[in-house]
Length: 305
Ligand SMILES: Cc1cc2nc3c(=O)[nH]c(=O)nc-3n(C[C@H](O)[C@H](O)[C@H](O)COP(=O)(O)OP(=O)(O)OC[C@H]3O[C@@H](n4cnc5c(N)ncnc54)[C@H](O)[C@@H]3O)c2cc1C
Image (cartoon, rainbow, N blue to C red; front, side, top):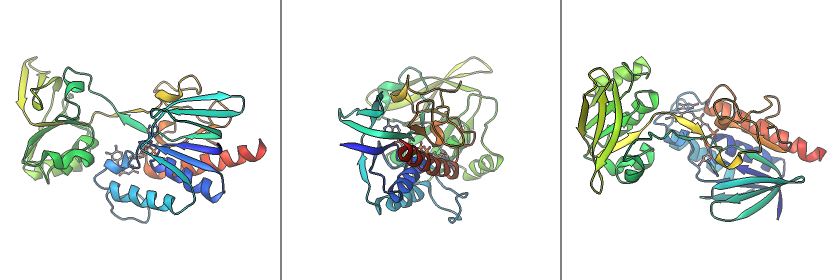
């Protein structure tokens, strides 16, 4: 079957693109690894109009339910592996070895967590090491854990762990946390969060599961071991673009370059929206706006072609 439009991604950008394309009656397929996205991992959202305060997970569930009200085909749990263009038709091959064709495509694959790239990281992934507190936090109930990364994401992860864990270390490689002052104060007031600065993690250790973390104290160069039973990595993110190499232009941060008016990439008929693009601000409302723009531009492209 040849779709009018395939949307890759189930975050705010992909879901909004889906809503707009459904309302334009485009024959659309949404391929989404999940319907959580980055915002589904946020503890609280206070800057999306209409919701004074809502958890990121609840907000994205509302988005998803809204999308599902429309007659639109969805493949959840499926991941795009490669996109090719043959003539005017795009072919998408997924990690599940399925192939789909479409006249236009919107890439809304957002960002993936940046890996630590230290010894033990791959070995203990899913065995005490996690990149998603919303997904895995409850598994660490009663345990002492470490969060790597002292930015807002690291602090928010620690706050979410407060309900489960008696003690939470935040390890920051710099000489002070980058998180907002208000988050640092909240951590101090919790009585359970301890921030360790100048800590460059060198290894995750354990037997079957994580039991300690090794870091170098950057002031004394001394290697120190922290006994913990879980690690959450929160050191930033990278655009999720591995499946689209060769077909679009990227900026110096590996983000997909788009025409800011239309969200079209360097390949006609191939659009991108949200955090995967070179648009300056990475926020839910921006991703939604871009998803809408990309879908309307794809509609116009399909009308012309
Ligand atoms: C901890 C944290 C807190 C935040 N707090 C806020 C906040 O309070 N307010 C705010 O406005 N913004 C916040 N943000 C930013 C916000 O989450 C992002 O700007 C927004 O989620 C971007 O949406 P997106 O749809 O572009 O990408 P994402 O949310 O990253 O969604 C990408 C989607 O694509 C899917 N995907 C990826 N690769 C593939 C593939 N190959 N095939 C199929 N599907 C794929 C993913 O599974 C996911 O569903 C926060 C971010 C984080 C990390």
